[in-house]
Length: 310
Image 1 (cartoon, rainbow, N blue to C red):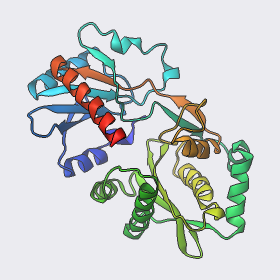
Image 2 (cartoon, rainbow, N blue to C red; image 1 turned 180 degrees about the vertical axis):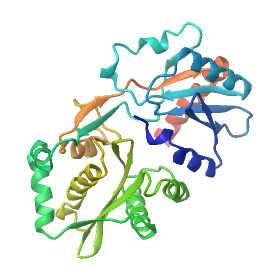
Image 3 (cartoon, rainbow, N blue to C red; image 1 turned 90 degrees about the vertical axis):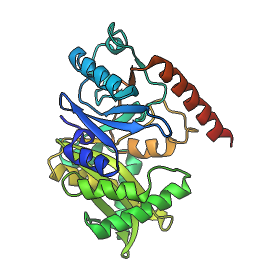
C-alpha cells in the first residue's frame, strides 16, 4: 500500500513550495538546500519498503552528482513485519546509519476499522465512549467541510492550538498549498460544532485504504462538551465509508510512556480509541559526504541545545 507522502499530489505540492523533487525507481525524494551553501539534503518519506541495493546505488550516484550530504530514509514499515533492522546498517557498499534526528515519531497507533461500528465502539476505552455520548447528548454535531470555508475554520483552530501549546510548525502558506493539492482526493476536513460554533477540526487523509489523522485543532471554548472525542469517532466512521481498512493516528509515544512527557496527553487521547501501538523500523541516513555529514550533525545538535536554553 502506498503512503500519501509518495503520491503525485504530494509531489506537486512540494514543487509548488519551491522544493526540488526526484523519482528514482518510482520512489519520491525531496531535495532540500542548505542556506548559503551549494550543499543539499535528500529525503525519502514513507516508502513502503526499504530501498534495494540497486536502488541505493542510484540514490548514491544521484547524491554525489547533486551535492547531497545524505539522504534520509523513513520507510512506512512496521518493525514487527521484519526479523531485524540490522540489514540496513550492515550494508557493505554504502554507509547507512540510524538517524539521530528522525522527522517522524518511531511509534504510532493503528486502529483496525474493518469491523462493525458496534464492535469498534466496544473496543474503545469506557471514558472515550462516555465522552462521545456526552457530546451527542449535549447537541454537538459534526460536518464534513472539505471546501475553502472548511479550510478557513480548520486553519484558525489549528493555529490557535499551535499557539496555546507553543508548537511552531509550518506556516499558513505551507498548509494552503498542501490543501489545494490534496483536497477531496486525499485530504478531507471534518468539524465539530455546538450551536453553530466550531469546537474542533481535523484534517484526515485517506489513501490506498488507510486513513491518517494528520492535523487537528480545537477551541478553548466549551471544551467540557467533548467535541474532539465525537469528532474522532465521526472521522473513523467517515474513513470506513471511504473504504479505509486502517486508521493511523500519525504519531504516538510507545505504550509504556511517561505521563510527564509533553506528548502524554494526545497519546492518551488516541489510546482511547482502541488502536494498537505500532513501532516503525525507524529513520536511516544514507551518507554520501561523510565529512560534511559529521559537521552537519554537530551543528544540528548545537542548534538543539541553543533552542532549549534560550
